[in-house]
Length: 405
Image (tube, rainbow, N blue to C red; front, side, top):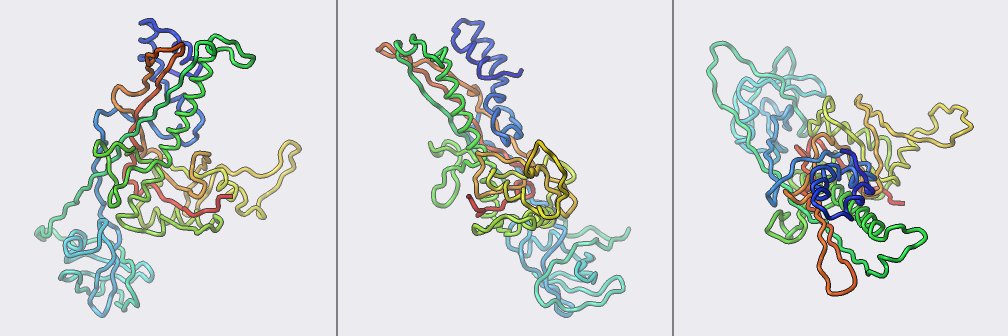
């Protein structure tokens, strides 16, 4: 049911059972239309189911990689780098490399067949009518296939480990009070003082939620983020915090780019889209992908390749407006700018993999607080859980350190 602040106020000032029932059954179901109304990004993040726990958890797993980092010397391939989110070790190598695996060096098409694996090294032979040549340094080798036959016994079984992700909750609350004299006084531009005050507070709460969904960070104890009832501080996680969390686990400067206050360029966006796909296996064939930035950052995008654009005569408009970025990898990203976004930050995000929601029985609470004087005091509050981001490494890339003026 669609609603707005004025519909809400029509029932706010009524205290009968029918009004209370309608607020709970109809009005609060559409409250997000009020809360999301003026935040372009928040309105695109879906609202999930209510929860009754202080921490929302879900499981994730690192997918099998399509490439390994290794250096070929003679017939020995030495593995390095990272696999499954941690420094390569004997166990992780066994999960992706075993005798019969075919590897290809994408820079020149040389293929190597693994004959045996010993710790972090493999003995290989040339394959597919190619000739082995040494690597000058560690490089990426694509995992092509494995040699298999009807009579080969299964060996070195594989399995993926899982990790937990989690977000906590945050209470959004405001109070206001109105003296009876002021409530009963008519002002030229304020027809109803209660309605005027509540409307302003709902706008403030909506703004707080928009900021939280984009930029909120959980409480940090100096070593780790702390969620849930282990602390009374907010534990909600905003969408822009997820790259910070995942990059602390395993850094990838290709998808977590520090510009050092230099202007955004078209190449920056092309590279972010490319490496999110190459390094983190982003799936651009599905989802709801957006470039999200502050209006100040958007002005740099407006000027990309301005000298090469076709200009048509129009007596009713002046200037350029860009709402889509066509990346060189063949993916078009719609652009949304939001004033609540950090001015120095831009992200590419799959919003289909994100959601936020409300604590059980706490979607919106209004409570009149008894007083001893000639005034009314009210409390407005609701509690949300942070932005859930499924597989954030593959679904959110960030550029930060952008100019803010």
